[in-house]
Image 1 (cartoon, helix red, strand yellow):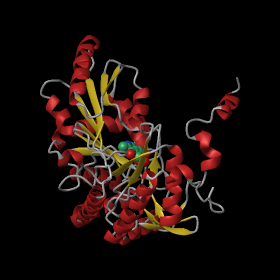
Image 2 (image 1 turned 120 degrees about the horizontal axis):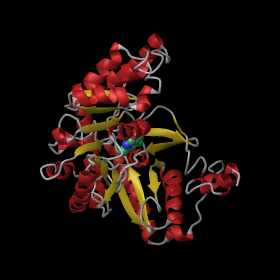
Image 3 (image 1 turned 135 degrees about the vertical axis):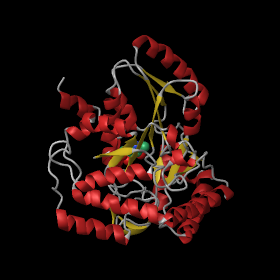
Length: 417
Ligand SMILES: Cc1ncc(COP(=O)(O)O)c(C=O)c1O
């Protein structure tokens, strides 16, 4: 069969909705500066869908640093992979500063988070090694594991008993193969807001011999007394052997890094294929990252502002009877009973009648019969934004309970789809 014939006949779980969903439910265009209020299809929306946790995306000092660096360096410099011709003093400076910020000896800049994790897993594993990972790990971890030829065992989400069982199997197997064990989880699970039980994993190091990789994409900058992440928050940063985060969230940019012991980072610099075979990050990204990091360090009040909004929002929702699962972080999921049809009607109602834009998640990402509104508070949201949202969600909740979304056909405005 022709490959194109096959893929066009089976467009995939999301692709099957391409025509109905384009521009509204998928690939929506948010217009204007990154902020709590942005334009969508000609209307201003109160926007709860961006991971701009600390509000750095549009911080005047960040915008100035980005613009000045772009004017000074352009987007090309330095050319080539870092190993060949693409290194600079500032690239080395950001490696050092990131390491210091997350309390590790050294770090290595990565061009992208997703690719970086895939490559990191590939670089540290041998076919003899055994991986044990949380079942809810992000796609970049799952896809990195596809490159692993050796065995992998999955443990039940955050379940330390299940992890221990898998560690026992992994220990037996690695004794036979002569390999090692790598445990992988996330600092903060980006859908549910649940923290990875890093403390529990590190505790198991006393009984089992393994290395520990944490993807802290949502924890970096938001968690811990200095913002160093979920390991710091749980007091186990030292027990994390490979600490990863992206710049795509609190740093409001692009790029990523992995931090570890000095010798491990030296190994990674010489073995991370995503970096050796790719051009290094352009200077404006590096200069911009240095500025963002400086702000994270110098302005802890930004993190405090984030947490004020998080608490105000989450307390307000809980007081109104909403089920937020067990989030312990800024990621705020709101679980409602309903199907995909009701979820799309809620989306339309929120956007068209309340001017609220947030992500809505349904089966197959979460179990059938559940709808999850995913709200991401940031340091630049106001209490007024929260009040409006609480009011809107209450109305939507009542309508859902009264079965109104089952009956109503959403009012589709012109150009909406
Ligand atoms: C947990 C997690 N890991 C990795 C990534 C990928 O990072 P990037 O966007 O830099 O590719 C994301 C999403 O951005 C994420 O949520």
